[in-house]
Length: 320
Image 1: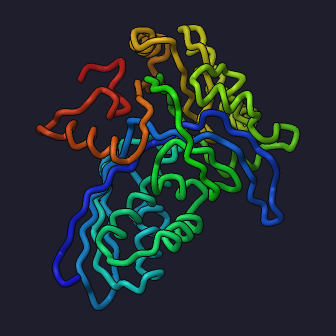
Image 2 (image 1 turned 45 degrees about the vertical axis):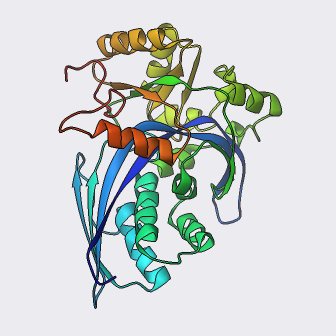
Image 3 (image 1 turned 180 degrees about the vertical axis):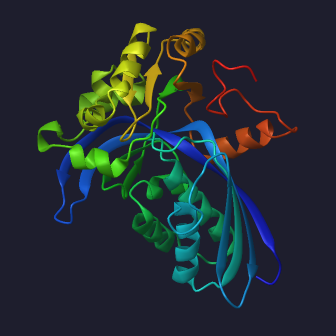
């Protein structure tokens, strides 16, 4: 790579349509069973690379106050990619952060996967199996985000089975004004909270879009509520506003609601901001994969300042 190359990648958020804990390995990692779905809220990364005698990574970030060294998963992904494939590069990564932190939406893991995708597109002959193995080392959610399509995810996150959903939804996302540490939530998790694998009846309901709140059970909810009771208040609010199914995503703190039609979602979004002005709300759409995301994101960025309503987390209930 003699000349500078620049690639833009999009890093979507995800929602967990149910999250069950099925056990814990000897090394302490919990094993899960969940359906992951990417949604139309995303970060944007611009990765610029040029060959260098000594590798380096310079990360800048807009939209959030994040560490810019290896504590940031995007920077760590860049370093580990260069080490894995013996590529000394001078990298500059510009990150536009739109996905809230500590909300269970997978933003950091998605940023890491987007960094890996960008670097794999620049380098020739990167074996997908080695990239998958590198993703697993970086974090449990990173393997899913490498391809970011609806999937049943098991193990510690490394077993990914793509699934076809017979529905498209606009969902109301609610984020309280606090972050939840995944480590703290898992530390508060008790074996009594584990409910085992997703049942075939629940999985069928998720595939067909006929799910209820019970079908979307999240075994981390009790632990999250012990740390952040506001999560329960937001769940009750979405139910009060007419959501037919409500659940927490990941380890929290965000919750989401599914409504019977788009008009109900828009009405609930406007009312939610009035009922709970301290929280942030956004209407997001489920995505089928990265190509749909890239097409939609590019179209949204066609003119300066132009964004779809679903793009930014502060887009509902506030003047734009």
